[in-house]
Length: 348
Image (tube, rainbow, N blue to C red; front, side, top):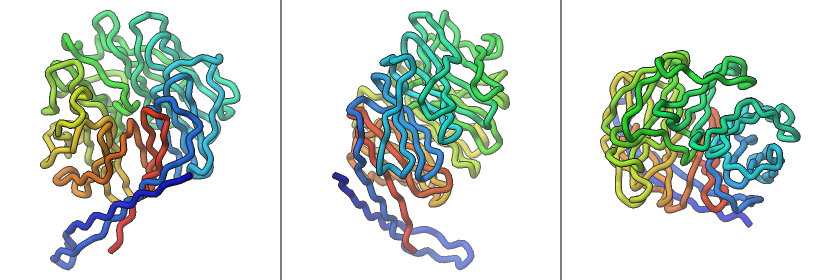
């Protein structure tokens, strides 16, 4: 059974050409889907408004090809029950999944999960892979936790067929307490110019950036920090010049935290004008409606003005979400294996 929750938000926006303001009715619908799993979902990759992949605990890999009407559970590689917290889909048939925890593995399929090829493995018991992202069909990176006192960044230049760890001399030296987070598989973003950005947390909150994934620079940000559970949990680019990151502290989910934003392609970062309503594990942007959505364990917030104002639209618990490209539709999943579609529409 599908249940629809509708949230209506009235906002005021400026109409530059006519030099006056007008009221806009924003309609947000949360539509429950029939999910084939009760396992925690954290990885997500949305190709279009009809096709999406999700992944998570217990070897869970899901796919819909009809806008969420039906979700198929794909075969797990080698019948494993790994925690696949990150997934990236190139097409309806080709995707890469990344496991968090031991053993750290990366698999690729070219036949919609009928078979998987192991393309990377690290058997160090401390290995932990957080997130995957691609800037095009060939170049991508995977971010992992520290190993032997150095950050782990893997890079591919052949569409994920092979992966190579970036030399530690080209990656900023880790702080004593510093790692990325795998709460939503979205600690990596690609800017409008094609630059990679990775968000971190810990004793300070830094963002690493690189033009090509080989050489990296670090920038300190004002995001909340100080302990291993605090920092940047998710980062996303609008495709129009803005880059925003969210997070907080998952051990204090109901505290309010400032997201951070860059309008300078990552050269500088500032707090947004308003706080989100709690710890937030994921953020994404709809280019169609110029809307940011961010979510976490205590609900979902929306902003139409790049964080000057945030409106809490739901108390629904989510781990991850992602908009379909050039669409008003987002897919979201949570720790109970529940899936919702979020439809955002603006009525003038």
